[in-house]
Image (cartoon, rainbow, N blue to C red; front, side):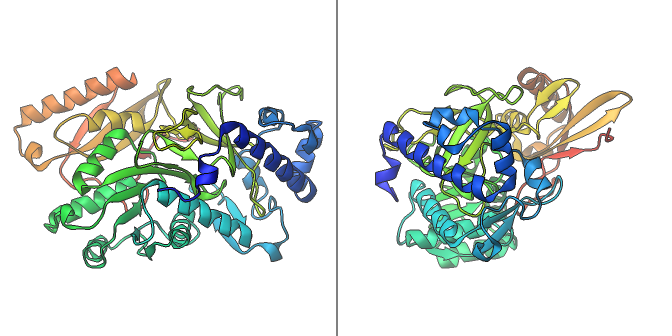
Length: 434
């Protein structure tokens, strides 16, 4: 389904002209209203009208998360507070919260983008959206909620937690679209099995999963266990919330970025140099329609690549490939760079393992150590000790070959790793801080 065919199928040359016009308007807006940007532009010797095309965006200085924290809470808002209709914030797990604001027009824009997102996944009027993303300062719950209403679908604002109750509501209310984190989708599937609920007896047809990195193997696991299509959603609070990009159910080959509202770039995370389509690097976003909290060349730290080929669904907007991790979440273990998603790809390819794992980092003397804890199935757990030892050695070898890092594997009994009702805690880093 398509929510806005005129824009989502726009020829790329026309899209570039629209982006350039909206970019200049946004630059004028922040230059006149945000001292931080005015100073950055002055130091760079840049004026908004110097930007003649989208290619000129490389002349503009970057913005990063520390800039947002330095101006906590409202220092980068581009409208007076009496124009701010709503405030959201990130979780703030690594420092102060990142605070973002929305005008009424911003909220309407966001709802339109989320309606597009749901339509990409095949949803429309008559669908019932079981929304298990968290409500509150986190953008996920309310983002999906307003988009579903804009689309004309019915929303069940269930939020997270109370998993058995969620399953009862899926049975009784007939939800057709599930929205939550991929790890919570697996949790739902596991509890359904305990409750002897056959997923095929539900009306669910598609799940829209995001807010944490997940692998292609995990997609296959979710689709098999829940008997649905599983598609990826991308967003971040600083840029909008969910609704920045969405995978279409027809292609499942990367998430369409809604480029009439966002300009996306890929850069080398070390040098800041722009990279061409197809090369992996750090994702950078510029918002070009936001009023209350525009961000200019914002470094997301998410590692991905862009594909500009027209999708099988007909949408012309670039697709971002699945985020493998964040450059600031990358683990450096004895000089080797490792993303949790790389380890997950290995684990999901081995029969007898459950999709629940944790990476535990520690330090022995001067050396970092990595222990991979992963659950095994009931059948494997009851197997002979020598077979379990053989499985553990095989996992260690596969991780060494794929990730170039040595680890110890600990096979954990079923349900031995704590379940998540939101984002899964994949990494436990016990190394002493420098």
